[in-house]
Image (cartoon, rainbow, N blue to C red):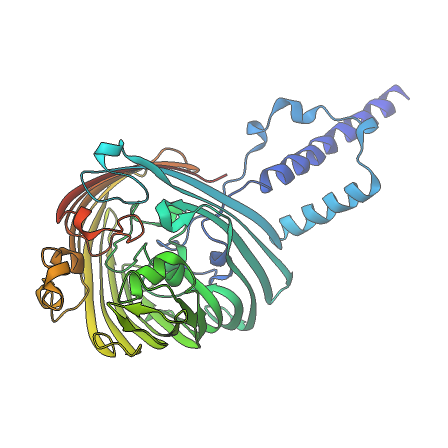
Amino acid sequence: MKMLKCSRLNNFLSIFPDKTIRQIVLLLLLGNVSVHAQAQYQNPKTTISNSQEAPAKWLQVSELPIRASEVTENKKPSGLIDRTIDWYQKKSVQSDFQIHGFIGQSYILSSHNNVFGHSTSGAGGSFGLTEAGLNASFRPLPKLLISAQVLSRRAGEGSSGMPRLDFAFLDYRLYSHEANQFGIRAGRLKNPFGFYNDTRDVPFTRPSILLPQSIYFDRTRNLALSGDSVQLYADVGHSRWGTFSTQVGLLFPIVSDRDTERAVLVFPNMHGHLTREVSYIGRGIYETNDKRIRLGVSGIWLDSNYDPPVGEKILGLPITSGSLQFSPVYFSAQYNAERWSLTGEYAIRHFAYSGFHHNTIDTTNFFGESFYVQGEYRITPKLETFIRYDVMFTDRSDKNGKIWASKDSDRLKGFEHSRYAKDFTVGLRWNVTPEFMVRAEYHHVNGTGWISRLDNPLLNQTEKNWDLFAIQASYRF
């Protein structure tokens, strides 16, 4: 009898840690970070790249708190809570339901010109860039994914930090077999262009604190980041030739924020609002099987109308409704070696303004041009550095801004630098742990073509040549 009792006790103790571990894992899941919820429906045979991160690291039994074992049969949860926990545990183990998040804080100091707040040395720099997000995904059916993210971003006058819906969509996989899949997504989706736009809101997936501003403008970030869309996607892989991925869709762009309106409207003191129209977007990316070479082409055809207030006038002349078409094309290339990577992207951006019934903007068409070249070197698995040269021209036929300034020399002469920017950047990244990262970077900039007009409302208070230093700490939990 004594041996039988000991046997029962041992059997009880042998299953007891499993229950405890499941309870701890539930708590950890509520705060565990993924780089991006959208990465969860990528082809499972695709290796990790800049737009994807490794799965979250689970704690081993030896890493769990000692007090986790202090549970007795007298402290069982109620029936409803117990059923909810059991359901959550089951879904989590099956990867059907996941919750993740991230947070990043930056300090920015500039010699002149404000970036994300009053960042100049006279103001003591700025802690005005704070990024935080919480996302969740749920797969109720093998072919159906539901995913959403709420994002809070405080970035100078353009972003107050008020939480907003970053993305929320349904993804239905129409076909999936080995390396090939086809599907459809609908809802608020990330706009697929370039290498980094899909994941630019998560600090861990960016190559730097500030992405190359010639391609990924922060002053029109809400417009570029996501939109209400329906997209078809496909991933086709071949054992010898590599993988080709594409996304195409209809898009209703987000054009209703102040920074975007100040950036794309011809005159900074226009008081009307942009309204969105049906637009189109698409991207194709080719990768070799060893991921050494990545090539991409992206395109957007964005349409928006301007709705002015009654009686609006500019320079004494009346303004009526008008339209803006913006159609950039992006070319992307990357080479990856064991210790270093070389990346370059080029964009040509067509702007077409029509209407407005104003003699200076009745019919305006021009092409902007942008490019950057970036090298990254992985010193150790935890430490890496980069160097980048980034160039943008608002109008490629007027790269120095002189033609633009000549249209109103009394007001614009001397501020030609607002039509271009040439940015030389070096930076360092330290992955302290898989969850915690620290980085720093220095920019020397000639021109002010990409700075926010809300943070710098007066041209006569901007400087042509300036420097910027930034540090950032980011955590995913």
